[in-house]
Length: 107
Image (cartoon, rainbow, N blue to C red; front, side):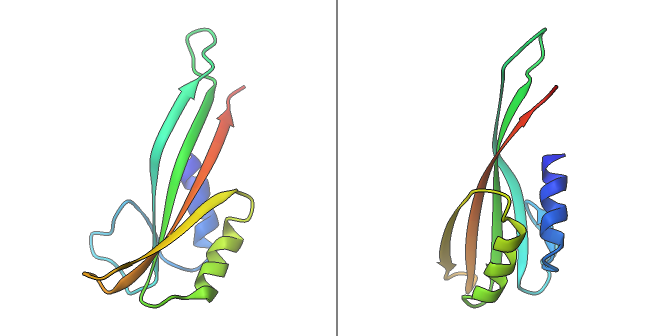
């Protein structure tokens, strides 16, 4: 459910989005998402009631594209995020990494 909501937000950017990988990547730019980690705790009656998710969002572009980064960051505006970027020489592309933390409390 968490990833579905993130994907819906990212779909508004009109940049293609997939989970983890593409079987055949579309032309750049595109976005990949994945769950880096999950922590479940707060057990009550044998059920974990709190879930912390760490979500990775990776924006792939052929150039440093501030316009597309701004569009993605607008989609992520309701979250705090960490942002890093690197050049992948072997693929001749940039990857901008966004990491967000989400806490979900079940009722």
